[in-house]
Image (cartoon, rainbow, N blue to C red; front, side, top):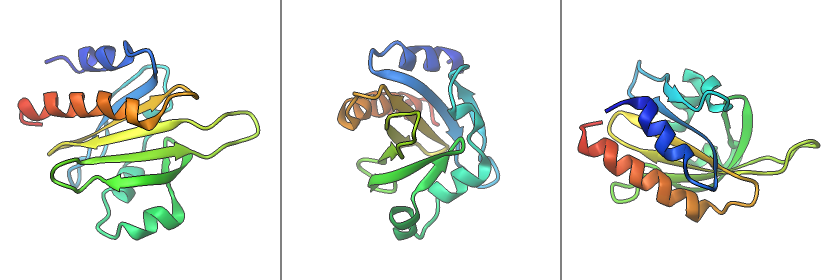
Length: 140
């Protein structure tokens, strides 16, 4: 399996503008592969650690940051064994609209998918779920 092929497959979706696969195991929190022109390339280990915290309520209170972009947590089922997903929305700025971001968790990685401004998180969840199932089938 080629990581670049996984990114290419995700980016072929009409409603996707950015994606990344990031290690989430302790000590392995780093970007494995990312869309070359995306902001997820700059996701830091500290940002991944913040997403993986056991204390989940602070995520709703304080939000999260991904690649230096502030986000609001809309739904957190990241540690739910059946779903393993999270929905985020970027915070609006003067120059940028808001974007939905869907995250899926596998044993070793987080998959991030950012949609176009008009995309709904539900549509992005289909993409991250499919990718997560594929990675799980390879032991990731």
